[in-house]
Each structure stands twice: as structure tokens, then as C-alpha cells.
Image 1 (cartoon, helix red, strand yellow):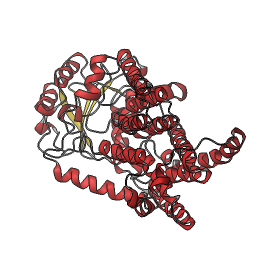
Image 2 (tube, one colour):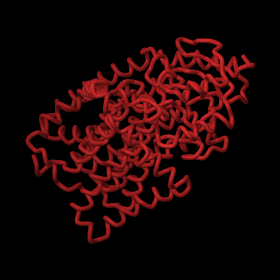
Image 3 (cartoon, rainbow, N blue to C red):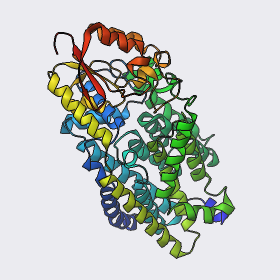
Image 4 (cartoon, rainbow, N blue to C red):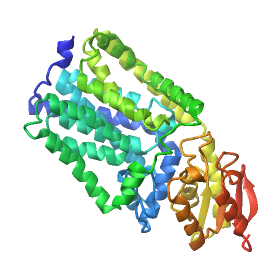
Amino acid sequence: MLAELLAPPRSGPEPRAGRRYWRRLLPALALLACVTRLPSFTRPLWNPDEGYLAVQARMLARGGELYETVVDRKPPLVPWLYEAAFAVAGSGSLTSVRVLAVAAQLLTAALLASLARRRWGDTAGGTAGVLYLLVSVGLNPEDAQAATFGVFMLPCTAAAMWCADRHRWGAAGLAVAAAFLAKQTGGAVLVPVVWLCVSAGEVRAGGLARLGAGVVVPVLGVAAVTDPAGFLFWTVTGSGAYASFAGSEIHVLARCLTNTAILALGCAGLIPPVLRALRPARTGAADLWLWLAASAGAVALGFHFFGHYYLQLLPPLALLATAALQLLPRDRLTHALVTSACCCALFLSWGLIAPRPELDHARRLADEMASRTDPRDRVLVWGIHPETYWLADRRPASRYLTAGLLTNYSGGRDGPQVGERYAVDGTWAVFREEMTERAPALVVDDSRGKPYGPQRVPGLRRLLAAGYEEVGVVEGAVVYVRRGTG
């Protein structure tokens, strides 16, 4: 068993047979990718990350500068992708980026199929691609169906392993860089890629140097075309308080256990064959185990355990399950596929029928904002739902699109480390300057009893007291306008 799993990849099939194989498999994978992403098209938004990206893209299109007047704790690849999609199809809908997300999932499945086929044959290739797409929805729909950072990171990580499997080290480095530039934790795939390079004896042949250049050059290039200091701060060094769960241990542990249980249900067809066939050979398929372990470390990094973090585990899990199924009786493959299909249908049903109360609240709040302001006005939403700006089609008065950046509430933190003193370094000085230079026509306190409300944020209290009066309440969100304009 161990010898089978550690056997070197077989050489590829004849080109003509390969073309026939892909002509049959790709349409099936494309259809399955469309089916599994169907719920994503049924909501205007799935989570605040989509809203954040949509607002960022509009700000960039209006001349904003990334990491200066448009900021987030993420690398720039996905905001640029949104901006490009909006430039082609308009910014009033996320349909264009949802289509790109379908393409990203299809590309990931195809790369995994190619990896599995090269190692274990034609049947394994189809198995890996199909299993991946079936389990790709095995999370809370707001995590699995949203077109955000994790989804666009996945084809880059799969491409890195695909290139490394073929000893294309420069290309593997480029793919690792793309994964990092989509989401920082995508860089975790570098661990199994380096292992493949070293185990192939490519260090002296310059493989490791080509890999390193492929990773470093694109990242430095992106830093140079944005703002180098801002890029470093917002993507690496400026999130110390965020990457902590001090004071929120029970809250974070509950989220971790909940999302792990949901993922286990979504992968119910994959986990049994992996445990059954690979347990006696824990060192088998070492690169895949390293990929899974590095991805698990990336999920845990920062101690937040959001559901969409778990997407990173799915590609290596699909490949490990495919490897295990090569060693088991044929009926195990059928059982794995049927179980995965049933779980997929369950999660798709959840996505199609589950209510989204926070989206309904954001829509009503956006309607109120739009009715009280002119399209040219700037507004401030003090909350964690930046999609309200997008739904109302109003410009943010600040580059900080959520109160989390100014209070450290980001990540659902419910402990004592929330307030001005825990904000991202330097943000309050910039925020006060923004409020002085272009005071918002309307302010919405959408804290609704959360620990980042005005009662715990003196800077917000002073802003409201200095020039605003309350004019209404929308489901607990308090609306203020400048005095004399209400």
C-alpha cells in the first residue's frame, strides 16, 4: 500500500487519448460546477466580504488608491478582479463575479482531476474532479456560495501543486504568489511545493531558486504598483490585534467546533475512505498530507475559524480521498460518490431556502439612506455591513468601511479587546481628518447593542454630538443627519 501511494507519477497518456478524455470530462465538470454554484445567483449578496469588495471596486473605479484611500486587510488580486468585472458588466449586480467564481471552481476541479489522473489513472481523474465539486458547497451557504477571497484563491493553490508535480518550478512559484495575492493564507501551499522540489532533487539544479523567484518577483511587483509600505502594513504587519482571540475564547471555540462539524458533514463521503485506507500508511502521499496540514494551519491562523477559511482544506481532501479509493473495493467509490452527492443536495437546498435576515436589514437600511440623501452625498455607516453602501449606491465618507478597523470588533470579537485603543494603528487620526474635511451628510449607527457602539467609542460620540441629530431608527440602527438638514 505504501509503495503504491509513494510511486512516482506516471507519464501522461497519448495526446489523442488525452483530448478524448478531456472532451468527455470537462463538460460534465462544467455542468456540475454550474449546478453547485446555482444558489449563489439567488441572492444579491451573501456576506459582508462580498459587500466590502463591491464597495472597494466602486471606490477604485472612481480614482481610489489601494492601501491609501481604499484599504482592507487583504491582498489586491480579488479587489482588482471585482473592479475589472464591474468595468465590463456594471457594478449594480454581482452576477459577473459570480460567473467568475463558477469558472474558478471549474478550473480547480480540472487541475485536481489532472493531478489525480497523472498519478492513478483516468478513473481517478474523474473521481477527484467530481468529488471536489460535490464537497465544495459543504459549508454554510454564506461561506460556500459567496464570490470572495477563498474561492478565487483555490485554483491558484491547485495550479501550484499541478506545476510542482510536473517539476515546473518557476510556474509553481507564480501560482503560489497568485494564491498569496488572492488571500494571504494561500501562501501555505508553498510548504508541499517546496517539499516536492526538495524530494525531486531539484535544489542543486536550480529548481528551488526558480521557485523562489516565481514567488517573490510578482509579490514585490504588486507591492511596487500599489503602495509598498501600505501593502506591507495592511497585508502582513498591521493585524496583530486582529490575529488574537484573547477575551473571546468561548466564542471562537464555539465557531471552530460548529464550522468543523459542518465541514465534516459536507465531506461525509470523503472522510471514511481516507481514514480506512490511509491510516496504516500515514506517510503515504506525503505532498498531499503536507498540503492538508499546511491548509489546516492556515485555517487556524488568526484564531477566527470563519467558515470560508475551511474552503482551503477541500482540494487536498478530495485528492486524498481519491488516493484512498484506489486501494479499496469498487463499491467504496460508488458509496463515496453517492454520499457526497446526497450531502451536496442537502447543502444546495440549504442555500436555496435559508433566510438571510442581515441582508434584509441592510436592504431596509440602504433604502432609508437613499431616501434621505442625494446620490452625490457621502455617508458613514458605523457597523460591520459595508454592503449597505453598495445597496444604497452612496459613497463612503471614510476609507474604513467597517467599524471593525476602528475598534477591533472584526471577526465577531465579543470580548474586552474592543474599542479605540485596539484599532488598527493610525486609523483614528486619519478618520478624524476625513470627518473634518468631508463630513458625511448622514451617519448610521448600526451597532445595535454590540460592543463597538457609541457608548464605548468616545470618538464616535464626539462626532455625533458636534454636528448631528437623530432623525429615525431602522430595526435598531439609529440614523443621524447634519443639523439643519433633517
